[in-house]
View 1 (cartoon, rainbow, N blue to C red):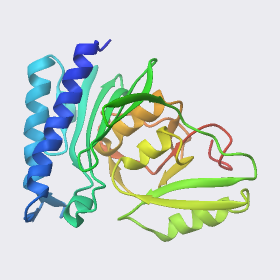
View 2: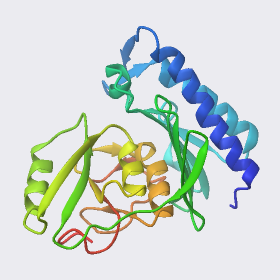
View 3: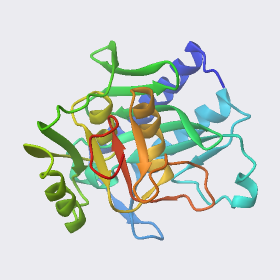
Amino acid sequence: MNLSENDIDRLITAATEAGDKIMEIYSGPIEVSEKEDLSPLTAADMASHHVIVEALHTHFPDIPVISEEHKNLDYSIRKDWKRVWLVDPLDGTKEFIKKNGEFTVNIALVEEGRPVFGIVYLPAKEWLYYGIAGKGAFRIRNEKEEAIRVKVPEKGGVLKLAGSRSHRSPDMAAFVEKEKLRYREVELIAAGSSLKFCLLAEGTVHAYPRLGPTMEWDTAAGHALLRAAGGRVLNLEKGTELNYNKENLLNPSFIALSGQGILDGID
């Protein structure tokens, strides 16, 4: 599917309007409930969900939507979908609750299991990133749009890794120690939500290993952005690109990379 400039403008508008709803709630006291899986849920998650889904149904009525807040669709229904929107209306709910600004709105278009378009919007900062397969990746700040591209670390230099602000683990510490054998220095940069993909796509960091569970809507938009910026997201066990609209929407452990050959034994 070739998205027109008008289509992209509509999607950017949906993301920013969802962000406006989130920020209305962010400015006051935040009430938190729990989902069935015990993860946190706020009114902002649902407000953003409704804005985005309504926009997608209005402008792209023939493409189904999987959203974190509306995901109970049986695989027997989904398996024949050639295209699907994957939406995380508020990625980084824990960061939202902490009020540290590192939460995002994620909208991705997946075709034949591959993310071909993605928007990541940071409403607290009013930064927006988007990527289109075959056309490139872009960042909008202060109403200025510019193309962005991944950067590969110098051999034997400093390796910059993005890591989760809310999900630290011994496995991640072991991963860092291993890479210290190949690089003069390994710097771990903590960031919340899919902001980590944005840092990778713009060249601020070189890789993002995720050694714990994530869902498809957590990664699809960032994955599309990174692909458009020249990077990849690989299944850590198999070394193959992550794919989407699987029977089980849970992602395997993965590594997001700026280029080939930067991590030993992975890429």
